[in-house]
Image (cartoon, rainbow, N blue to C red; front, side):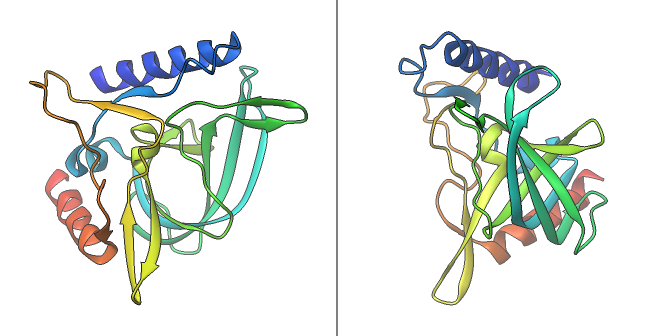
Length: 191
């Protein structure tokens, strides 16, 4: 519950600044740093998926959001099957001549591969856990797949920390196969 409160509070602050026009003052959202164990525990779905389409629109609350259609390649947790399409939503985007940006929200490009730790919001879409921490970009280097968290626009903090610098689960590039093995082990332990 503490995590959800801190995420809601930081999102509310960033949204308030964006709406009031003070976005130049908002450089980062304050977000609790999540290790891999917390990402897996908080996620309802952990999937490797490719972005196939995106569109921005106003949601039922009048906020600008961007939805991404993604095709699942592999599932580590949840009910999605390989080949299935799912929708991932982030706050922000551009509709007509109006735009909204929330620091710390992930962005995706059509065609890219993402390791997504998502939580369902209703039955229609997923939201990345821990803002962009739950959406790790996958890239190839020397014939191998690697991944890392994109923490740009986030000030990561640890609950009750003693001054140590907080880090995301995969801040440094990690071999995707190694990370997926660790995710499988965590999913098995958490059952």
